[in-house]
Amino acid sequence: MIEKIKKQIVCSDYDGTIYITEENMEKNIKEIKKYRALGGKFVIVTGRSRTSVKGVIEEYNIPYDYIISNNGAVIYNKNMEKIYDQPIKSNISDKILKYLKTKKNIEIYFYDEEDKIKYHNQELLKIRIITQDYELAQIIEDEVNRLFKNDVIAHAAFPRMYYDNKDFVIVDIVSKKAGKENAIKKLSEILNIE
Image 1 (cartoon, one colour):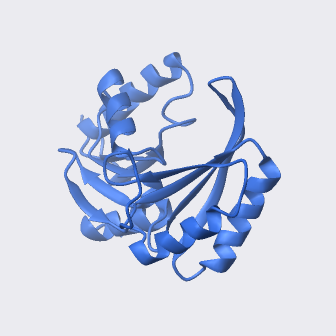
Image 2 (cartoon, helix red, strand yellow):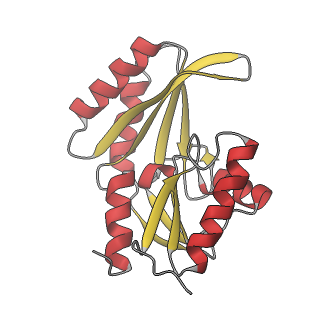
């Protein structure tokens, strides 16, 4: 007997959800395969760039139908072809960079469709700030959301993250039209799912 799926699409974050431990990952992949075998569409939703998420998909052979990456700034189909994006406009990127240059003790990274890039007055999918100062991260999040409220969304994540012998906080900035929730809504619209 074939079960009937109740949900046509399931979306899941990668870090801390699909992947927590190796054991957890194996169980999740089995469940994703079962769900997809019943006709469901599985979407990985992540703050990672296309290059980063593609690496873990290949490493663990994670089945998927769509990827929403860079915190909702871009959607890819199962062939890793871009089907939708919402970049930060270059004039806004310039203003944000000017603001960020007033801050000390931060690292600034710019992302296009693939991964980190050098900035040359262009549209961006994401701007990422890394700092070891949690209070500074909160200030940057609040000020960016206030100063550029019509254009972008800033979100501080991973307080007290530990990597490469550093304790740090990430602040990601994406277009106001992006964001994981908006990208899921857009994908549902593209797939004609209510």
